[in-house]
Length: 132
Image (cartoon, rainbow, N blue to C red):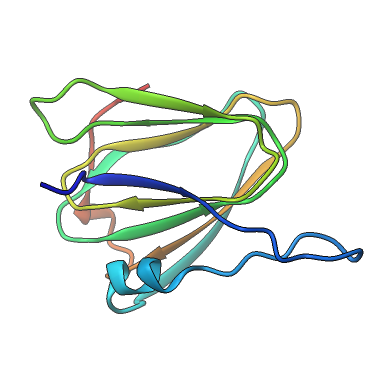
């Protein structure tokens, strides 16, 4: 059984100009079709998420910068898990329907992320379930 939340470090192919990260083909295959792209900034101490999606697959790329943590579950009857990141590199998080997820900015600088979704944004499709 494949986990409902998968975490992958992205390779930095940047040079003297700065970071450069490419979304891997498996992330695009996971989403299958790109119906929405969302860019968000999270202030220090703030949390984005604490919800799950009914249908939507989501590939979240957290960009380098602030220290942060990912919190998730594998479904309603599972225990919440978490993993901490130092903000040194970009991280790809693949989230399947039914897995609640949240990103918390544990640093002192803004945290930026890009979410690629398989379905258009619909607030009725996101259901609150706190994992942090």
